[in-house]
Image 1 (cartoon, one colour):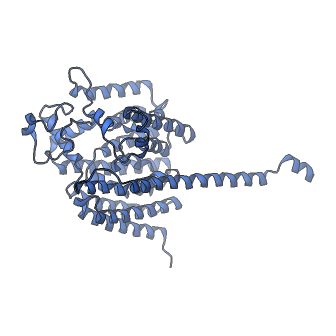
Image 2 (cartoon, one colour):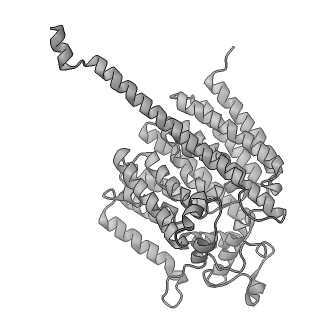
Length: 442
């Protein structure tokens, strides 16, 4: 007896739960072979589930409820674990603590002996202690807010998981209002990157993702002021969504845009240094921090890093303009592809950067990006190599596997669309014979 689609989803959910449970127990050895094998199993189960989402118009509501419940369980498993070898969250605690004590994180260098007394048990291991913070002001103020509640890794991770769960509820509302199948919320909630990078390591990106999705939802409701403000706040967390600006053209009023600019300016006020807007180590980040960047590495040989970074932004903006005209500004793919195109050319492509794309991946046209969220999994081996004292780089064969999978998926979809167009054209010519044939038959 063949399995029903719902039963197949239950099986994929069980495999995801089992594989991610094992990964949570091996989280301290992020990137090791034993960790990657089970994370890859989870990734394969996820892709098989996405195939079910694409081939079936609807699933019973109980399937969605059970699927979200199981996802919440494996989030909790990772939430209860230490962040492992990823150390960004230690920087978040440090930046929040500095602000609470009246210091400027864009100026203070953590390794400065003069501030050694400010460290706690969780901050001496923060990343790049010889540099001030690179994060935009929205992220910094979020760090301060959580640090005011409790200066701990657990408090920050709880805040990120709360944002993750909030995305689920906003996404469900978006799906209902747009008439899309609600099971697409599982395409978000089941992605293994959420368990690893939000509940596990804890990354600020999920806060920006929530704000961006709120902006997207507000555009659908014609709440233009809310859409503009939420978009501006998302940019204040990480700069990546700035490439989506063309999608807001003429969809928000001028006064909304001006209000957003004013709010963004006010976010910088607490950090002003002699009337100068600080950027911390952002310039160093662009010039020196490179990871998982085959396109950037190729272009950097012929142009300065700053120019290539500018090119990455330009690629995203042009992609947004193209998708806005072809698919419409309100299409989820129009939000996903510009950010993906910009990341493809960026100097740094960490796995958690792809979190920004997840709420907008719910169609066959975004399948290459969906595959990218899984094909990027082998890059975790770089953290394992660093723990062994080797250079923090992604081996070439992994780059080929990661980006080759995406390119192959994109080529298959492109060829499939061409064949469908050809079939449609042939069917049209048969249905509507030429005037010459009509005259001949008469």
